Image (tube, rainbow, N blue to C red; front, side, top):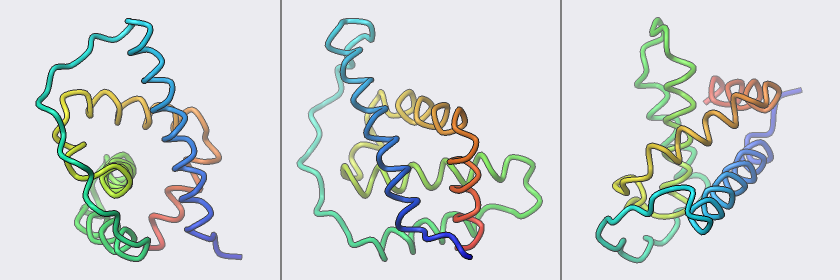
Length: 125
């Protein structure tokens, strides 16, 4: 039975939300230096899930099939697209975005079943 991309997207979004909450708690506790970027503009209006799926599909197809880091790049493209869709494209310009993305990817890698599901869904796009 094929995987339902929307339900798996929900799982990944839940994991991303958890990571962002943990990061916010570390900021509040003073464990992470507060970046001083210019204030972000109000998030753009979210696009529908089909627009997100199309964006992810385009980014995944642009990754060479023989690229030895293909899986890592697929995950990264997916996470960047979902985060921009959820929180606005300005997030990609934030100084702390790389750390956030690395933390989410690390967390995803720590859950092999969820990671395998994510990669399986991305491979079907």
